[in-house]
Length: 241
Image (cartoon, rainbow, N blue to C red):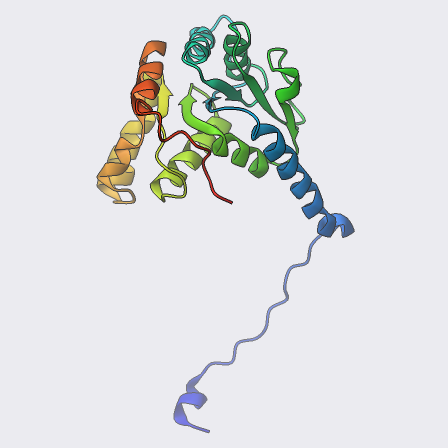
């Protein structure tokens, strides 16, 4: 035995933790996932170019951001875009409402949650999709949206916006307009991104700050999207699967 082998310490094996419960149906979960993808693709493939609107389910109709989301959806409808939301209350309801009341395409991608109410009443009957899995829902949000309007929201909204930013940053999808609405709401997060992520830790590139816009007016949202697609040649579904 070599000197090196003699110097290798003997490490005792440790007991691996065990699952408290392992359901036998786990192997069949894939079929549920596949069926959800198939249903989403077949139904959304028939819908034209849309803009996804993200925001809090807790925003009340009297909130200025709710009214702003209605106006944004109305203007997008007038510009020829469909509107996709998460299908629930709050900002999602406002987005569907603005599209539905003004004759636009109104899509709702609902998610089953134990503490939130069912879909809002402003979704087109044939464009109301139910999801069990967040990750399937995210694919539908991203694949069929040509832009993302992000109203003030909570953890779910942040999850959605950083997912999209990551996909654009890593070039998994083409660049699309990503517009944060409400400068006073977003400025603290953006300051932290600049000071901590960029300048302090160098975890992003300076150019990554140009992947999104921050605005205060509904008209600015539509202007950015209209100018981005001025040539009309780059309107196509995202994500090649």
